[in-house]
Amino acid sequence: SVAPGAPAAAKVAEAEPDDVAMLDGNTIEVMWQQTRKRVIKMHKRVGTVRYRPKQQRNRPDNVYLVEFERRRGTPRTAKGPRLRKTSWPKLRGRKYVVLRSPLKRPAGARWTPEEIEAVRVRIEAGEVHESVARGIGRSRDSVASCWKRFLPGYAPQSTRDGPRVKSGVTVSLVESAMLTLPENEGTTVEVFEAVKRQAAMKGVALNLETAPGQRVVSRAERGVTIILTHRTYCPQFSATGEKRLSDEQIDRGDNKTKSRKTAVYKYSPPIVTAEREPGLPSTKRVRAHTPNVGGPKKSARKTKELLAGGDRRHG
Image (cartoon, rainbow, N blue to C red; front, side):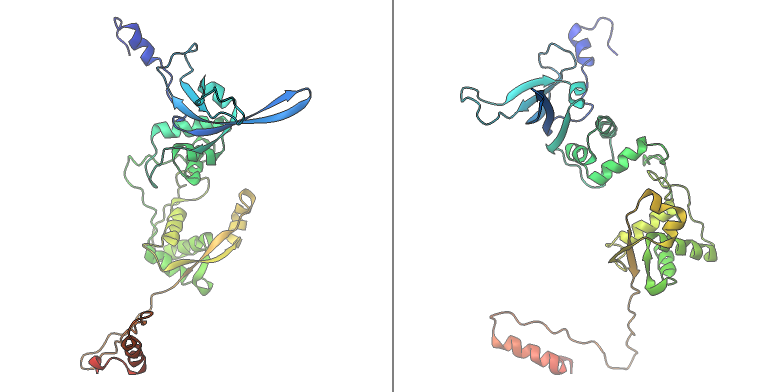
């Protein structure tokens, strides 16, 4: 709040509209149609939006300055971009798409309140998810996930401020569950159903409450999906490249909400090799190195020796 004796400049500064849509620096393509003599013509203009709350303006809400590129055929006397002062209410009434933006957020970065509000106001104005994502430096999937917090029927998004809520799903539980499936493979829903059966047999409690930002997917099922798709920490699970709609999805009505098929994952148990018993010769085989192209002939001769009977140094 402003003190009663504060100067007028301080009051004006506090009343300046914020960049609520985070449009500063976005290069947009504005599209509109114009009708002349019963002929409808589409117009397009490309410009860069600048947030200028201190610029001189007739209307208080005109805090944006759009630098439009001049069209071909413009007289040479007109130099530089075409400047237009505007506001967010005016821009939201136009159809536009973001072409590029200087913002780039790292993957997994926390959402700020400003970003969440920008997603809300821009999508409510009719902007597509891909354009919003390009404008604020996020991915399209993350914007779609953020937008779910404003839709009815979805669980609220996690703020990550409180204690971590565990799903109850472990890697060993998923491995034992996939061993019960035909050919050790199945979709996420099929694997989750097998995990529930294994958890009931072993007395493991699963967290079945709705996961943040989801409509029907539980925290436990979300945990199964993370394990199956994490190639770095769980390389034993791999996608087969096949996609199908499982019977479990049809039973619970997933085919009514989304018709796309889901990926099939396969579990490859690790190959256990027998250890060398004391007193017995080592069974370790020497790796045959591929000779260098254009290298000396002894490199190829060495490779032939290794493939024939092993290295002489190893007996």
